[in-house]
Image (cartoon, rainbow, N blue to C red; front, side, top):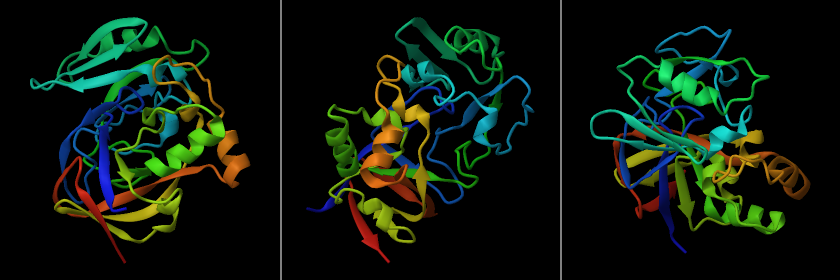
Length: 248
């Protein structure tokens, strides 16, 4: 079977909202456009705009599983519509005061955690968990292997990946470190595996932890890795359905 790009996802606000898209223009030293372009810091963290910061400073699904149930839609006017099953929709405007977003998130954020405090803008490399302009690439065959061991379907949104590939063998992505993927007009070099956190345990429809994904990974394959980080080395447009060539 040939390898194809099956799904493309972006997450405009780190840890808050997922949006499926049909295509994107990839550029070196940049995140996927509008992926992790903003982040919300917890009280006590420094509100440093335009600088990468470690994930511990931000609201994330590992800390607050209800965040995993948020979906996003980037609108033509530059705003982002956020939806959650227990809340009215919220329109986030990066150019306006963010107190309404902070209050909206506070309604579903655990009270024992430091409270949501402020929105910060990311550098062009995105506010990803890796401290470089990372693109997360995941394998649908690995997801199916995990589903079989969990004995239930698992929504791809649990893993907050950017690119999902079809046609690889289960876990083959972990053998592709240092390989380059040619997708559409772009080239991406795989850098390192992704070590997973408890965010993946939460159901994206409900925000409730319902699958011990980390335990399943550890018991089934003796690791907690799922997916790989890559960086764009050649600019170009990618689209859902593109063929993927692996070169060394």
